[in-house]
Amino acid sequence: MDEKMSLTVGDAVDYNGLAADRSKTGGWVPAALILGIEICERLSTMGIAVNLVTYLGGVMHLPSSTSANIVTDFMGTCFLLCLLGGFLADSFLGRYKTIAVFAVVQTLGTGMLATITALPELRPPPCHARDTNCKEANGFQIAILYLALYLIALGTGGLKSSVSGFGTDQFDEKDEKEKAQMAYFFNRFFFFISIGTLTAVTVLVYIQVISVLLAFVAKSRPFGSETDFSSRESDY
Image (cartoon, rainbow, N blue to C red; front, side, top):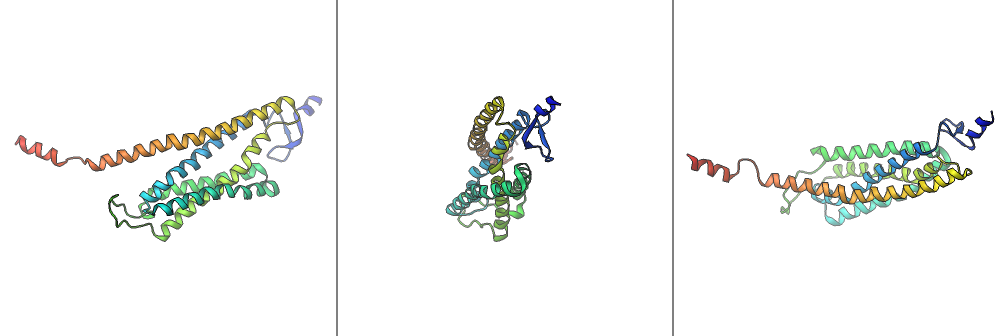
């Protein structure tokens, strides 16, 4: 009986609302998953943000000033909505349910944004970079793009407001050993934020630039060019 009481954390509950048992919940396994969620969130949000100006100008044919405003509004909304996420977590849902709900919201937004980039109907017709009469995205296409971006912003705000606190909830501050692990978790948490952001603005941007260059080379040198035909004619 005494051993069971020692495994129970008096001022903490699990996701079922029951007294938390150290042997079944908390610790480094859920904390590591939370770190994984955070690095994926940084890769997703920052990977979208750093490529968004290029996409808005090159694909949606919007002016540079408009594209920059859309990106800054998107990033500002991501951080502003942390206030809403924190309020919902503290007053109504709790951190666990808040993270679960807003993770689904961000996934829906990211999936919608990927769909927009894949469907020709949701973007204007392509045109050459030197063409001065490129057709801009219409109101419906911009509205769908905004819906996707602000679903992502809503999901990001809900996650960022709760995920660090939920990570520290996995450790008992009254236990000296777990208190030290909590500090170690915070160090790793901000390290993973930095790694995710750095990867998004370097590796993902590099992949995007390389894919654009390969597409440009493929379009500029089609199969069966005039040189190939002239060489074939000389053979005859």
